[in-house]
Image 1 (cartoon, rainbow, N blue to C red):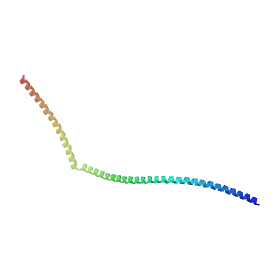
Image 2 (spheres, rainbow, N blue to C red; image 1 turned 30 degrees about the vertical axis):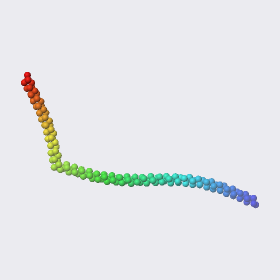
Image 3 (cartoon, helix red, strand yellow; image 1 turned 135 degrees about the vertical axis):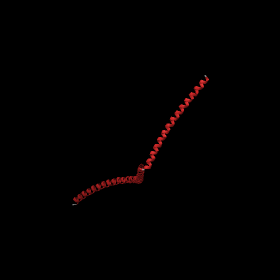
Image 4 (tube, one colour; image 1 turned 90 degrees about the horizontal axis):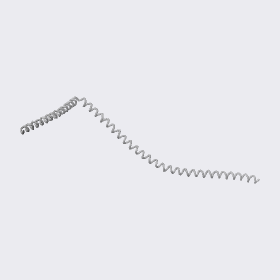
Amino acid sequence: ELRPEAGAWRAELEEFRARAHDADEELRSSEESLRRNTAALGACGCEREGVEEELRQLAERRERADEEFASVRGMASSMRQELQELREAVRACRADPEAEELQQERDRLAEEVRAESRRHAELREEVEAERKSWSFLCLRRTQKRDS
């Protein structure tokens, strides 16, 4: 009666040993997985610090860019307003009769100056021609007296 019981215990013992062996294998596998995951977590932690620093720098750059953009928009708005004022001033000048009269007078005086310059050049040419003709006459008279 002990033999069948001993055989059952042996079978049970073998089953326990097999289960213990499987549990040991599973434990080793879990420990290896834990070691790999711990290493990956450490690497991720280091990488995370770098990524967080990069994110912080990008946020700062974006903030500066937003400030610069707001400044440029303000300047653009100011320039649009100034341009509108200049357009209105130009329109007012074009519609101003006194300004128109002054422009016409300026154009007329400029034409008079050009005409006077031409006349002055013509008179110089005439004087030069007269001077040459007098010099020639004087030279001829001097030559006749000498002969």
